[in-house]
Length: 249
Image (cartoon, rainbow, N blue to C red; front, side, top):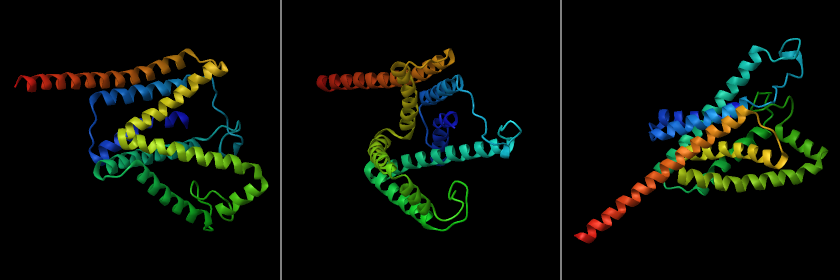
């Protein structure tokens, strides 16, 4: 799942192009390809072995997942990536077309999300994968029963809600000023920086393939930084020439 989500930059760019005919600078395509390839290499060349299924209900005798089950998982992942791409590209379009702030978008998105999840949580729906996984009763009843059984979970839930809300403030501020492509690049490279930090703090070992993947990601980020630095320098040179021309006149 993490490996699939590391390719999120690709559907975000594709949806921007397909839905809103948005064009990107050529170097953006190179940066997206390098970051996606680097994180894929980092995830794929790790020492972790894929876990086997706990039961053979949906697989073979060894508990391995069947082709059908794997297809369902991949389908869920692709749907998630497509919806992510459509959401981010639509947010870019809203910021470009209407004068809204990141906080306003954050507020209204959370209002609609709260309304939808509240309705789903109290309706006695039959079991629906993803939307209503409870076998019986409502989602709200199951959640309250869990809290009654494990009252210590209240404090972590409050901390999770607080940190999530604060994090959203920065997310939507970045969306407003820099766009979804930059935001997704930040979130993906943040995961890589977290893993590299674990190497320093907890002395985790990386394989040569993972170091190579990290190098590809940093090279992609460097391309982005170099292009921006070049553009800023060119803009300054142009401004200086214009000032000199005006002064001469």
